[in-house]
Length: 98
Image (cartoon, rainbow, N blue to C red; front, top):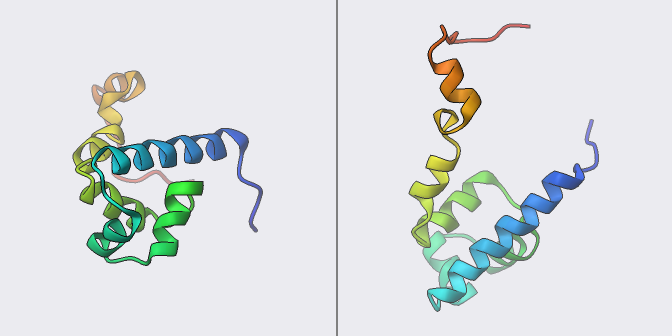
């Protein structure tokens, strides 16, 4: 069952999209060239850059072409957070069952 996108998530989508678009413009890459290098369509790239909408794979394709893939991966590292560092010392299970 689909629900509305929470406001903080929608805000983050727009901010990330704006950041990626800024990186694209700073590198003087057109949307058409970016789409070609990513192997995805121009409308898909535009939607990602304008709205932050799209698949995770397409997002990662775009940030890879713009040289931001390593930083994106690092940003998702749980050991980079205070809670992750705190929990790293504990016995972290391989699976969590409900």
